[in-house]
Length: 103
Image (cartoon, rainbow, N blue to C red; front, side, top):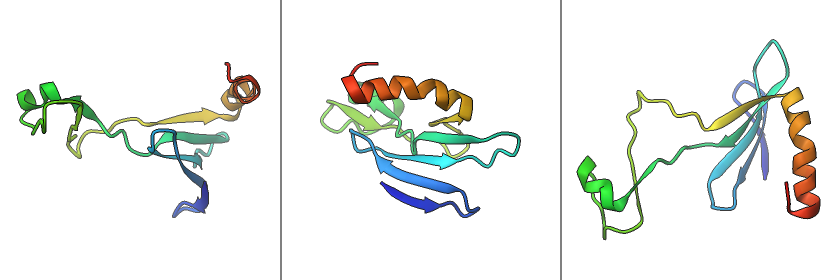
């Protein structure tokens, strides 16, 4: 995990999940209440290789998944915007997971 600051000065923690996806936890700039952003940094959309050709994509060897390009004009939500109250509600479940491996 690496702690940095955004260009606007908000705290940000970058890390990688179990599958190697770049993720972050960042203090929100929301002015009305405390909140954080948590999630993957990029949606990394993919399509089944068997369906790729139907969408004009190279299917490679025809197995697995193929990157699916999304136009820049399209926005994909990848992060949760959580208030302090929502984090408080999640914490016992996360702590239970830490202690027992269960939620």
